[in-house]
Length: 210
Image 1: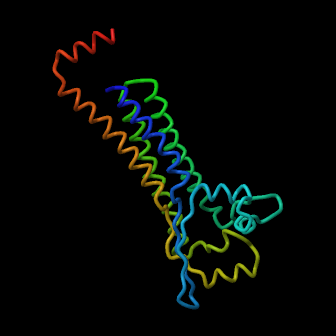
Image 2: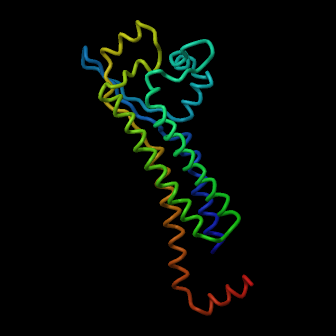
Image 3: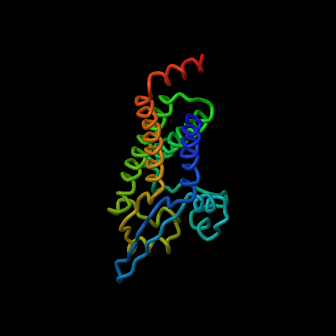
């Protein structure tokens, strides 16, 4: 049974990585002040990677301010520390998932799995909160969304008529939390099973370990 416990934990931890890459990352809705029209779209991390590497040429050209390649948007400079915090917290969640995956393959001990999973959940929730604090500035107009893409004056004029109705994480962060919760529930369930085992079976297992 312990091998089943370790395999399932490893699979749940491994599932976090494709979920992060391929599930919806950011959802945004924009509208115009001139007429009733809007756009709702979601993007994945895979799409963002394709943009930054130039595979999505149209979007790459929009965010590239010079021939040297990608330039961090000047409009976000005052909030760079918060965005770095989002990346760091995201990285912690991924490291926690990697730790659970490797540990589950190598060891039966469960406390480290519970601690790492709890850390992953806290990181994902904190990451969401910090990101929302920046997203709120786009929704209330503090940051002009058009300034994130280009400094061209013609495009900048669109900033006067484009309104960001909503921007936030779409679903990948919920997948991270859900999978870590699954790992915790699965791990705790084995504690309950062991508590219900007859004393004779427990003593036999201890003898085997020795």
